[in-house]
Length: 221
Image 1 (cartoon, one colour):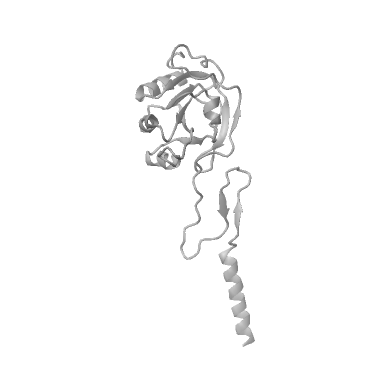
Image 2: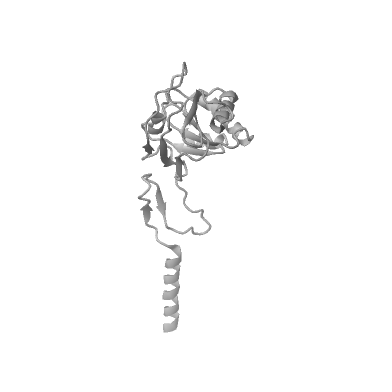
């Protein structure tokens, strides 16, 4: 009988160890407030999934801000170094821009009907190969939970966005640094980090032109 109770006690101890701790912990170094847990899945349950990040708690922008964009006349930003930035994507992964390859930044706003038209156009340009040789990064910005099409992460997912999404802060720090005055708004940067063109969205033509500017096949204007 003594051996029986020893066996029962051992079985209980092993079962408790296999279940893990049910104490939730916070990932403190991201500034995202994402809560994770070390509890192992039990009885076939899926592991816990963090909620997508819609607004970044912390954004780092380095360098001089570009002049406010004016679609009329010469663009004062052409020839200037683009500011670099570091933020997160909806999946809490690091997203950043720094010189090194031709890049187009597409500033898109979830509640803007013109952006809702523009996003699938740019997405198609990427998947068709029209942006080959250029990194395209969407910047989700100018948030307003009361103006519809929320949350932005679901919008990008529903449209099948095939590239990175950089999540801006509540005060639109990245958009402000790049001189955004209206949207959709596109900025082309060459491999050296120099701004070669800025355009408002409007279908495939601005995207194709900015690809040419970023890669140097079209002269900067």
